[in-house]
Amino acid sequence: MLTNNPNKRWYDGDPTVSMAISLLRNASQDKQTLVFNLIKDKGVELGIEVTTRTFKGFGLFKNRWYDSDEKLSNAMEVLRHCPTDIQKKVALDMINYLYNLELEQI
Image (cartoon, rainbow, N blue to C red; front, side, top):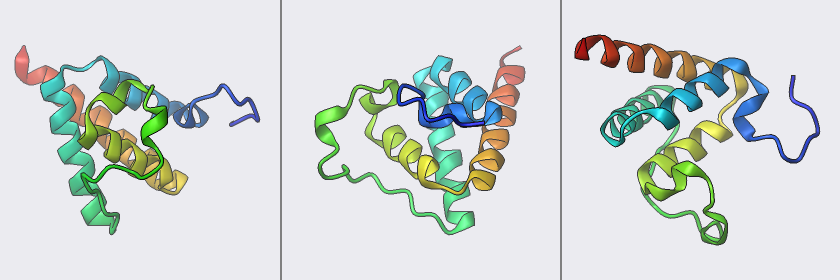
């Protein structure tokens, strides 16, 4: 359950989304890029546009770990603005995708 705590991150409201973002954060740059492509493909599938443009007025506060990569930052912003049920579906897809990438390396 999301509380009114202003220090809580947008993805901490759902444990599945939080886990997916945590796994993504700890993934290599290459895997993060692959997940961006997954989110982009899911966005297209669900009718959500993922662009590589910089969000106007947002540049002053780029302190989040994913803001160092513009594509990943835009994908996270799209995910952030999705309805909760879609966030959770994409998060599950992200977890499965990262898990399968790990299995391929074994």
